[in-house]
Structures are given as C-alpha cells and as structure tokens.
Image (cartoon, rainbow, N blue to C red; front, side, top):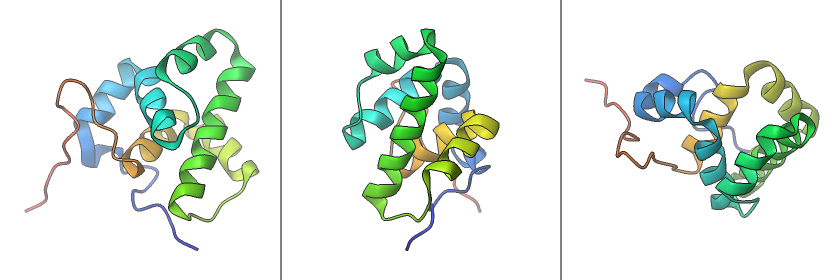
Length: 112
C-alpha cells in the first residue's frame, strides 16, 4: 500500500497552510472532511465543543483520507497521531487532499 506523500512534520513545506491551521484548525479540518465526504466546516466547528466528538471527527477524516489515497494504516495509528500530534496530523491530511487557505496562503514553498 501507499504512504503519505507529505510527512507528519512536513507542515513547514506549506507555511501558509501551517500558520492558518494553527489559528483556524476547524476550517482546515472541515475542508479536508468535505474533500473526502466526511462532513463540513460547520460540523467540524461544532465538534470543538464536544471533546469526544472532535477526536472522532478527526480520526474519521484521517481514515477517509487514507482510504481515498490507498494509504496503509489503522484506526489505532490514527488515534495516536491525533492525540499526540493533532495539529500536524490535520495539516498532513489537508496537504494530501490539496486543501488551500481562503487567503491564498496555501501554496507550497519551492526548494532551490
């Protein structure tokens, strides 16, 4: 099976998405969820008020990203990534699905 194209700590390759996601993580997660058919930004924003629902929404979205891209992994692995590296896991999933910020700050930096 395939692997993630973007590393878990590769969020700095897209600094605009990284910074935007730090301040508005529900937008990034919501757009990723919309891309895989797992919800909307509104549902993701509402899940912030119920901790268990928030974790479940993040795990479900990450699982659907893996499924849509044919990436190997398990529910337990997704849970560990969300609990210990949540912001990085959200950004990694967003990068896999090609999510951009509404401010146009979602372009990747090119290395020379």
